[in-house]
Image (cartoon, rainbow over all chains, first blue to last red; front, side, top):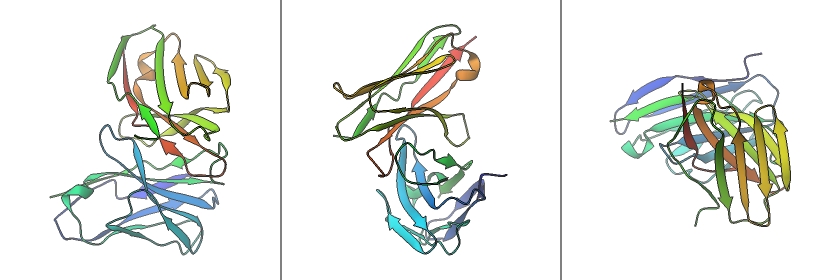
Length: 114
Length: 110
């Protein structure tokens, strides 16, 4: 049982380049989330999904896109990378939303945009 | 005003000390209160969960919620170097999304 896995672990992008951050979970969770974490700023929700085919914006969605074609996978797409997107990105999943339900986090992807 | 406020620290204490970590919040509808622990270069993991007001104890850790003051705390007794991490408070109302604090970086010095 691997839990939540993320690839790559680290990536350097040039301004204007695109990339996809991969996230996979093997716990059959309905809910999946993408967060970004900047130093001293906590976790900010980018997008989330309540099940395959259903996604919604979080607090900071601009510059990102997501899709959810399967229960297991929830990739995050950066279309035109900007220095402001330099951050650590975490994917998480949970069986349900809120109500004290535990969110399980992946190990993170560190992204540097130069 | 942020919904959840947490002093980012950093906080450095000697081994064996009692540590107090705190968060304040503005939304009185929050009912579910959680503490996540995040080791360096790792993802957060759930440490403690409390519903509504009151205390909850788990080994050396005690979570406390005071809804009348909109204030939650995490106490660590007999702190160990292995407790060095960033601690994030998180809370939600009903089936809504979690709202996280900024996180407090804690170092326990041997």
